[in-house]
Structures are given as C-alpha cells and as structure tokens.
Image 1: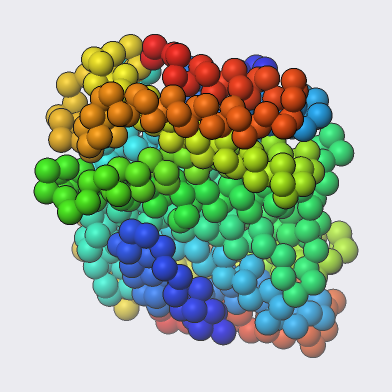
Image 2: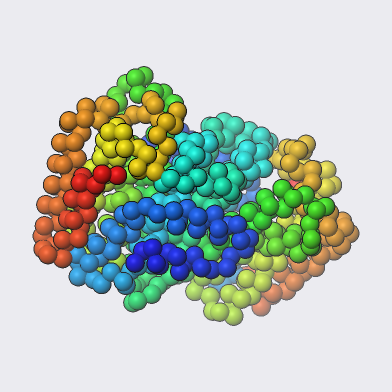
Length: 286
Length: 286
C-alpha cells in the first residue's frame, strides 16, 4: 500500500525535473516503510480502516527519507551507498541532495495539511504538532546533532557514554517512531489513555529498533543492511552494544519489545499488527 | 515585535545546546523581517490585531532563515559572510549548519500547529497547506534548484534566459512572500476575493523585491547588503537587470509595486502598512 501510494504521489510534474527525480530516487530506494506501517497499524488498533490515513502515514516516510539524504552527506556521515545504491548526493550532487531533503521535509507537512476521508482539521493539526516536535528540536534533529558531537569526540573520550547513547537513540530514532504510532492514534481520535499506551509502545520499539540495528551492525551484516561496511567515520561510533556489551544489549532489546507488546495488549486482537511489528524488530536479520 | 518574540521564543532549553545556539545565531543576525511584517500587515488590513498572530508570522522568519543557512553552504552559494557576520557553517561547521536549517524548518511548522488567541484549527491548517506548498516543491525549493542549475550552466549558455530568470524569481522569492501575505489573510478568515487581491500584491512585491536586490547588487552596494562582494560563484549569476538591462528592470520593479498597491486599494486605510512596505521595496538603498 505504502509503495503504491508513494509511487503515485510522486507522479506529479514539478519543475525542474531533477528535483522530482532526486526525491523519488531516494523515496523509491526500498526500505522497510516501518514508520508508515506503524501509523496504519496503530489506526487499525483503534478500529479505523488503514486506507483512510494512507496519505498521512506516507508523510512519515518523506521525513525519514529526508533525514537519510542529509545524514549521508559528506559533511555528516559521508556515505557513498545506501540500501546498496549510490547515495543521493553521489548521483545528483550535494546541492540538489540538500534541496531534495528540504523539499521532502516541506512536502511531508503539505501531505499532512490536506484534509481527506473525513479526517478533521483538529486531528490533522494535532498530528502536525506531534510530528514536528518529535522530528525536530525535541527529537530527531536534536539526536542527529548529539550523534555528530559524540562522533567528533570518539566514544573513548566521553564522560558518560551510557547516558549519551541513550539520549541519541531516544531522540534520533525513537521519537519519530513514537510519532508514527501516535499519529495513527491521533487521527483515530484516541483517548489520552490510549495515546499514552501507544506512546509507550512507540518509544520502546524505537529504542529496541536502534539497539538491534547496532547489534546487527556488529554481527557484521552491515552490507546486507545497505550500509557501506568499511566507512571510516563509523569505526569509533558510539553503539549500545559497544557501551553495554552485546549480551546485555540483546536482552534489553527483547525486554523492550515485550513491554511494547504488553502496553498495547488492552486493544485486543486489533493490535495484533502492532505486536507483529514489535516481534519483527528483534527477529529480523537485516 | 518580531525581534522580541523571536528572542523570547528561542529562550527554550533544547539539548544539545549547540543546536539552539546555531539556530539563534542566524535568527538573531538581523534582517528586515519582511515576511513576518507582511503577515502582520495583511492580517491588519483585514481588520485583525497583529499581536494575535505574532507566533504564526514569526514562523515565516524561521523558514526564511533556514533557507539562508542552507543557501550559504559550500555545496550551494559557498558564502563566508551574511549580513556582515560569518555564515552559520563558518561558525558551527557544515554538519551543525545543515541540521540547524532542518531544525528551523521543522520548528516553523510546529509554531504554526499550536492554536492560540482563538485562531481555529481550520485556519491554521490552511496556513500550513499554503506555506508548505509555496516554501517547497511549488515554490522556494524548486526555485533554489533551478537557480543552482542555471548557475552551473552560466547565463551565456542558456536557451531562454528571460524565461529562466522569471521562473527563479517567481519561485525562489515571490512564492514565500506571497505565502506571508496570504497567511495574514487566511488567519483573518479572508474571502476568496480578498485572498486573491493579497496574492496579486504578494507576488508582485516578491518579484519587485528580487529585481531590486539584483539592481542594488549591480549598483555595487553588495557590501552594505551583508553579502560578500567578491564571491566567485556570483560572477556569472543570472540577474534580471543582466538579462533585461538596468533601465527596464527598474521600470518593471516600479510598475510591479504600483500594481501591488492598487490591488490592495479596496482594503482602504487599513492597508496603508501594506502599501508602505511595497514603497519601501523600491525606495530602500540596501
């Protein structure tokens, strides 16, 4: 559903053509589409029909994709490959890549601002408030800045690496995943209690997701993940298993997933997709 | 009003501190605040009290500032100075500058998504729809991409430089200025007819503004504008007076300002601030 919608959405005829091409290049480069799927599953857990919010769920993929394009830039992680394909700036140049990212981020908010399928302005505005907070200064962007500062320092030269890695995972990854789950709830008109349960779920799987990413990295499956294996900048990278040890990291990821599944238990059978996504996070091999 | 609000707004305590510092460095670097002022003047023209929408007007300055930070990057215009101060990436490094821009853009939508002073969700959502379109793929970002493509080509090597420079000014500058004026109207609940008049005004002064910028550039007052005078990348730059001649460019800017003032004439005395801004655009000397 998500792939189909995104392909159709980017069929528009924007000028200059290279802007559309560069955005679509990264949007269509694959990926697990975990953020839109979380929004759809969360909306479904509250009794909604996923198709109704497909447009808004896909906005999250635009935000995720913009963050990858900017993250790969020479000034940031300096990656040449992403998901086995040359990164955006390798194909279109740095200037267009920066602007493709800016365009995707701006367009994400445009997608969220157009009412359809009877979703009211009140709910859409709350969704925009939530995602702009968690994708921005109180979430993803703050996590990215901290990640860069940590990388510049090197993990051996840090006062409190345990606190640092938790801050980075929480902000860089978990907040946007939490926003994805919450948006499904907000658009369905969830009560505060239900929204709290979804938030606990979202943050828990968000942190578990990033810890598992680090673990899979360390287990040497980097290439399969579509990351360059030998990127120099990653050598000293602060990771959860690097700080806490592989065994403890794996145990904590499993514990987080258990608590995530428990927190959406009250939604009953309708929350089975959310539980399945949580289990997938620790059982995936890439 | 705008300076005061922005200073207070950026008093928050976001972590890491360098993120707040880098954003505030560029936000507080001065500038004419023309976009927020346009929104306030437009709201006033429709009978509103400007103070009520100050938060939303200031969101436009965040969008403008993010675009300047990204525009100054080495991969883009590669400018070392902006408004007489070192550019953001010269002070904080490229990575933080990219993220400060991302943060400002995301936070702008956050500012627009929080209802206050009785402005309803319907109007705020329409404002977000409008600004996300005109700041993004159908406006500023598209104009930036075209500007870069034009610069790479050089103005002498172009099929239709007249069409090209008009496309760039319309998209890179005029659309966000139009959005600024329109937002004042949208938040005041303007009729379609009134919104059309504001749009004509906004696009006209937007193009006049950029044409006058080019003219002032050519008249050698670059240093006063806070731009580096001898930046290599600007030598072959496509400009309106470069394509149409200085005399015709000045005449057209004056004509545009006249038509802008005429189009808001129906609002009567309440539109005097809009008319004053329009006159300022051609009478300013920097």
